[in-house]
Image (cartoon, rainbow, N blue to C red; front, side):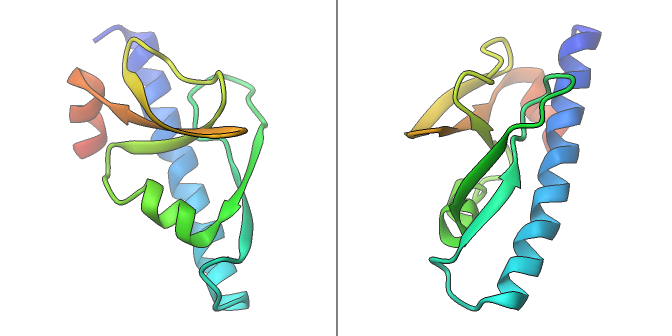
Length: 105
């Protein structure tokens, strides 16, 4: 795999790990699955600081598969992922090929 694409994939996994912690804290503070939560864009773009607003249940549904990530619109990398859902200001992408294997490892 291209080293840049490998870095992008690893960065996306790191941002998702941070967002999982945000989700857990949000659940502790408010039991409602419809409670809004702000999470970081899980794209691998260097310097991205985009924030996505969605409900806890939307976040959980988007991440029901380990190879899916929530990104700001336009932040996807077509060489390693495809858009599978669009939600206004944010999207859900699904990894494929070597990127999917990196996420699973």
